[in-house]
Amino acid sequence: MQMKKRLLFILVFIVSLATYPSTSFGQAPNLGSAADFVLFSTDGAVSNSGLSQITGNVGTNNGSSTAFRNVNGVMHDGDGVSAQCAADLLIAYNQLNSAVPTLFPAPLLGNGATLNAGIYSISSAATLNLTLNLDAQGNPNAVFIFQIQGPLSTNAAAKIKLLNGAQACNVFWKVEGLVSMASGTTMRGTIIANNAAIIMNTGDTLEGRALSTAGAITIDGVLAYTPIGCGSAVLNGPTAPNLGATACYAIFSSDGAVSNSGITNVSGDVGSNNGLTTGYNPLLVNGDIHLIPDGSTAQAAADLLVAYNYVNSLSADIELLYPADFGKNLVLTPHTYLLGGATTFTDTLYLNAQGNANAVFVIQINGALSTSTYAKVVLMNGARSENVFWKVEGAVSINNYSIFRGTIICNNGALSALNTGVILDGRALTTNGALTSTAMDATAPLIPGNCSTIGLPVINTVGDLVDIYPNPFQTKTTIRFNDPALIADCELKIYNSVGKEVLSTKLQNPSTILENNFGNGVYFYRVIAHGETLQSGKIIAQN
Image (cartoon, rainbow, N blue to C red):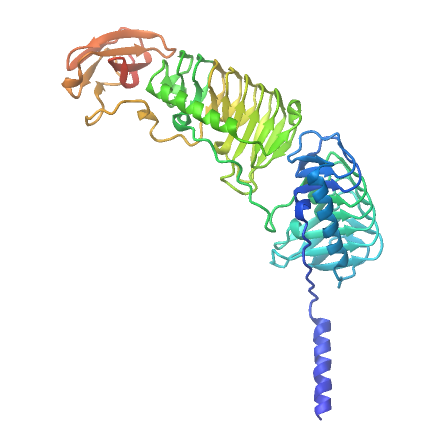
């Protein structure tokens, strides 16, 4: 009887194992420094043709990397970093090769099939066709390992789809032969080809890495980027500069005339600390127009110099080696970037914050900056214009109908062209040079709440020093001091919308009646005592 019960228990246990869904888990290999590379060969050339967008380091420990343009990463050919990567890659390969498989799929992968986490082994060449779904079943740590004992190829438009928390950083392909991806393939995971080449064709996307222990890597017009997650560092970028009073301005020069033609809309202050500000319509400026230098412009000039010195002192994480090829659908992540000469920005630049809304981008340009027409900066995955800063050592020209985002800090160069149809989501600031805008829109982000009081002395009175009423007015208005004791040596100056002085008069009485002798329009006034501006603002004359 006991024997029968024992046999029955064993039989039930076996049946349960046979009918229970199979789940097998592997352990991700330690990539070491190889995790920083998106393309790498221990022994072989790494080459590009076409317009490829690369995020991650690129290199070879024995060979050369050729025909790459701007890469969002560092190039390492035959140096100490590539030597360490080669050593770490061999360790990772051995870990993947020694993993014990428990799942043995057919060589034809995809066709809409869904696989759960586990260690898969294919004893021959394998092909990916249509869609292969990798399902983590809600476990973000689920690991997928594929051991392919021959070449791996993909058919056109084949793709890996990640489901229910699966992450590309937890997918690994160990291939004993050539890896060849047909056009339009979307591949996920880290590929390690042993003693064989890797080929990626036009329109391919790789969220992962293409690494070879010995073999050439060839790409042509692809998008390839290292995956995030799995303990990878969150990119914050550098600490943003403190703009101080300069944050109040959308358009500003510390030393140079600021002028406009055409219908230009501005959100933020406009002005110069040494030169006239002309041509801006007060009705189209949501901020103050500083027609002549005042306390606010003086503080802004001082703070702009501090901000410039800070961004100029930052050490670059990545040097973009081809300034003349900037843009062209390049994708950047939160870092400090350096372009070593005059820079031409063509087409589109993508700034990818990778989900970090506080991420900061600093782009240092050691030369002039010019854009093509219709150039645009695109913010992705939480990137914000207030966290983007451009330091330019020379003139800046933003050409027609471009969309530009971020704060431009131009050093000793003219912002000579903010051209027709330009949309500036940021600020145009220069330490020394003229600034010209033409029928464009500028919006300064995160304008401080104290802009109206910056540079003004503290007056121990309740309310304004001077009341002007009525305002708007028709034939006359009254200028009245709230404290007659403050009248001594006060002067009133009034300017029209292009900065020309139309009235200058002494204020010697508690109340002064001002006649409308200068025509309808919006005017600006300053109350001055002992050479300092005590109060400024707008008045509107209308008959």
